[in-house]
Image (cartoon, rainbow, N blue to C red):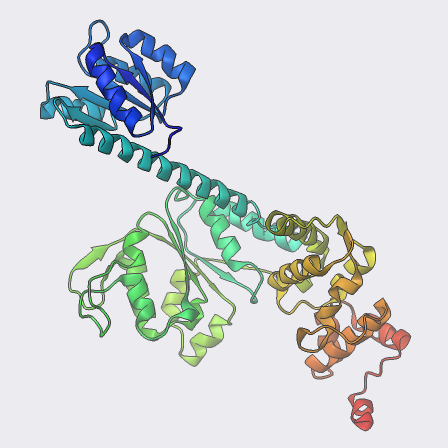
Length: 456
């Protein structure tokens, strides 16, 4: 038992109060004794005890009235009521008015200690949860959509319009564009924000595992189902479920999901009982769902049910004006996690990030900033700190080179990735075809693949 804990004993019989004080002192706790209920209020304010141990029957203000006054002023302060008039009705009334627990005289010392220790254990759990929530809030301050480009402002406007409704939303976009971030933002702005948000990566489940995860299962539904288990559609009732990569699901799952959306009901795997649920469904995909429908791998009726509203997230190459803001955002986040402070980024480095095609989008940019921050030797990120982006297979280059060397390697690498298609290369780099030709001329780059074959 922690020695620093303090208990306020409110008891008009001095012998009883001293007895309680001795029991608690022997267990390492400090106690204060108060015989007058009105004085107890002043002592709570002055001494800030961790627990109040209060007799129910006292002259003047009785324990029940004191309990109400304490809970009105200090609702989080635990109060244990003590009385020799133990009846169920009295206990229920005390608990209803906010008492944490109840002791009936006479009681052995061990029972008093057990009740007090339970309060401390509970208070510790509450405090730990508070810290966890604060940590989570600190972490979530970085989970926001960053950008001021027209493309991202259009997305934010869509989110604002639909969040307060219960409409289903299909979020599309390339890998790394922030689809789950958008889903979480929709949930946080919705009427369901006080309920749970449950994200499910559909691509990470095989066979019936996804259906078991969502619908639950009865004992014996499949080989490893040794006991019944509730699924997310039960746990997430009144909340939100986000299906990441919905295009990866099986026809069987799609049929069951359609039923949940249409009827608001489902069955556990291996079960016969129909269960009801009320959840908001958000989905995402990086696939072309219409092509999947044409190929017969995705149900057209489910697509129209899921995509009541569709939000397309632009790839980073279409919103490169947001790169400086994103870099600043990730630098702050890196400092909060690694405590390594980087004051900013040089113009040359920013120009380099602007010219890079970012096939992995925002996720790749965040990883690049984090890696550059950890490896940087100065208080600003330089072009050399991002040279790893252009080295073969992400390894460190043999030499750092100049900015022109890095830019030349970027263009040549992008040409190869685009199979020497100049229009596609320019688009991926976020420049015009004419600008690509001008850069190639300035840097001495041949745009003819045959010249590279001749060298080989």
